[in-house]
Image (cartoon, rainbow, N blue to C red; front, side):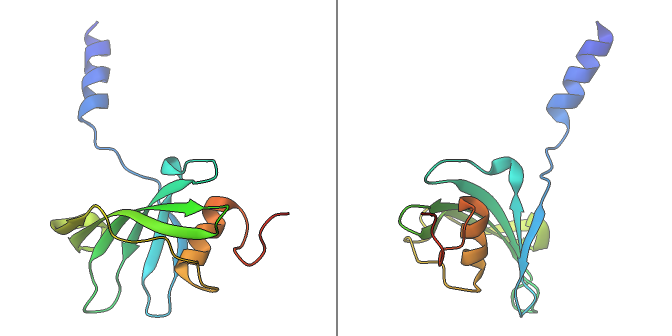
Length: 128
């Protein structure tokens, strides 16, 4: 009985860590990661991402929930939280629950990579 209680306590108290997968590194060195465990399926799949800034001005991190519209070929951010330091460290600088409208994922952009990851095809080559 004590072992079960101890195991339950460890499970509840232990922090939850995501298995972040690198999606793209941009020319300035910003790193975009996805958490595969948060990826949903369907015509409008979603995923949680982490953006770590690399430059002196952007050594912050953003936790963004993205949604792709696989039929209309669009992506949009559903929510964004910006942290003072990389890897979600430091205090929260702001929390934006409505960060953007749907946009077309431009070729070579992080949003194109994100769209391809979520929908399984490049925006320039929709499935037939």
